[in-house]
Image (tube, rainbow, N blue to C red; front, side):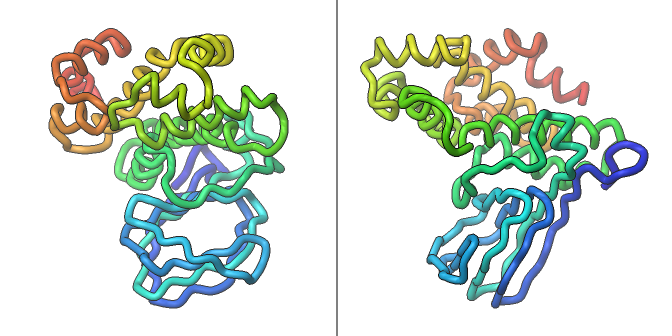
Length: 259
């Protein structure tokens, strides 16, 4: 896939691998998304000591540039591999030498949807492809900001843990009590700390992230409006429509027809 006139800034390709695996080394920051379950997936980073990490379809990993290790599996493996160039990283403010904790397992659901959209955007016009790839990189920057080592107070680390929890459970019935518990704070102190750090309340943050996910689902899938609402965390389709119109300025159906 081409982003811009010269350098490919994002490549996304489906790979079909036989049982086995072996050593790997990644020259660029990359994300792998499993398309099939791997109950006996074994994985290591920076050493040859494998750890059993079962992964299901829809789960995967995000590793920094220069990461190396081993990956083994006992069944055929289909996975989507997304690699991001230095140019695209710079476009969204990610340092090419960024060090972050490797992510393995359940990934941010919006990032997963954007990765899938980037993987199929070659079927669409160049502007669409560029837009989806830039959206993927921008959201990746936000996700990686939560897992960088060091920096920040205990309160900051607690809030990062809450954001991880929100992104991993975006389609579920998130409650203020659950989020405050995840942060190990009282409801009162959690709301104040969250609002001060992010500039918005926990409720408005969750709604905003759900609307981002809904937009991607409407753009990249044929799911019904009801199914999109459900996957975005809404049991009440009418309420979903109200929130969508307030954030996007149009109805879900109209938004889809304009894509």
